Image (tube, rainbow, N blue to C red; front, side, top):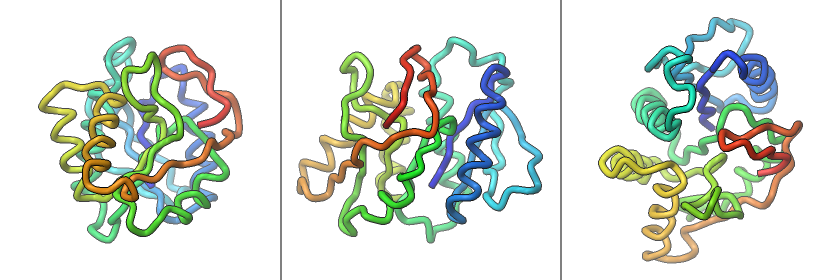
Length: 191
């Protein structure tokens, strides 16, 4: 699993709690923070060595670009044994997620949330996963077409479904530990 963070000052405590939460849930967790380098020696999980910009530089800007660059850096760092990578926006703590990842069909190429994204511009992108080979295509299309994450995910879903619909899995609606505000101002109590 890959946690994507952009530690802006008002979210630092949220991210600290999330890192502590996920560190207790699984040994197969990596995290990347394009805005800050953490010095948390007590954690078992690995931080991807990548910092793009200072946190104050991304306030109010398109976080999809930031997150795409974080994912791209992570793919080059994570070992090849990570064949199916689930990306989670780092501020969410979802107790049932590890169990749901384990339940994914072996033949799935892509796993997405059950609902559409904000304003129907694509598909919800707080949590989704895909085969490593598909991540390269996804990141390339995001970068080349300057897409928002939700729209890129929607196009990837359509691509996967064009082969066989069984290649697409959906996570059930999952409760979060606490209500978290999404970047568009919507409070999320489940994903």
